[in-house]
Image 1 (cartoon, rainbow, N blue to C red):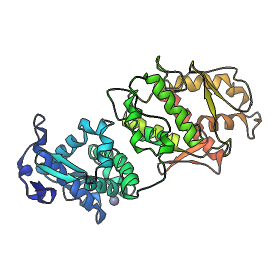
Image 2 (image 1 turned 30 degrees about the horizontal axis):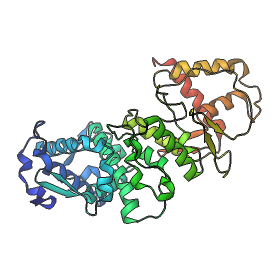
Image 3 (image 1 turned 90 degrees about the horizontal axis):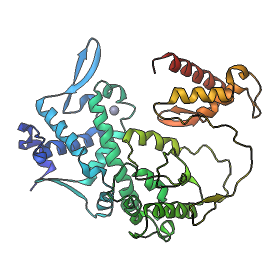
Image 4 (image 1 turned 90 degrees about the vertical axis):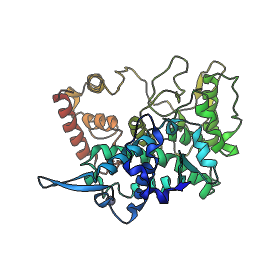
Length: 381
Ligand SMILES: [Zn+2]
């Protein structure tokens, strides 16, 4: 059997990947992966399978040759294979002593894929501009990093660090949110093996239970184990088969939506209840009860915001708070009404270097948010 070290000299160079014969390009795909690990010493503009082109003074990244293109096409095929979308495969990689990826007669240790994903992360900023000149490649690289990085993260925690620290179920559920299972209950069951005894509690695979019951038990167990209500967070559409407080882990989600939603939920800037332990109760009718503090009454509910209703939804909210006529009225929490409105809308967070941060100077941020909104409503949104 050839190993990846032989790949540079392999006949794949002469083979065009055939969509019907997937494994033709295995060596090509593995060669791209191996080369990516070498980005430790170099950057994308000097990557062996790429060349730069001067387009009216702008340096653009392009494929170095036809065979480099075939190699990248094969690489794309590997990343797009269904295997990466299934939930049960995670434990195959995580628990394997020596995880090896086999494609036809070619093989590559999982650690090479993992290393490639880690090395790419080092180029997030320095190669951002050059990769933006080749969007298809940038997307491919990002896709690879996300898919491999996710599984490698769990493997690293479990095997290499041999971390006794528990990974909460909630973190795992979000980590593998886009992975699919034929049986929705497996979205929970396939992750139980990664939990410590405390985090797992009494959750065990039991296929006599309904999806609703399994998801309910997962919520209650995660709250018990983490003493937080994190698992109740997150935007959700409410499917008919679940109460509104239970997130539907089986609902399909695109990787790009996942990326932003996870980023949003990870933000730990708020802690209104300090370090109080969360406790909740669920009765036999799936009615959830929680302790809390009474602050105010919800009097009006505006439109729900979705990808396509952003403008309409925000416009109804503006009307509800009667912002145009109350712009400069003082707000009870400090500042004026318009400041409170835009800070609420943006959760008082600003995206900086791919991370949400709270700002020291909300006033200037409010000004920027208002300019943004002006542009949105004047555009053909
Ligand atoms: Zn770089």
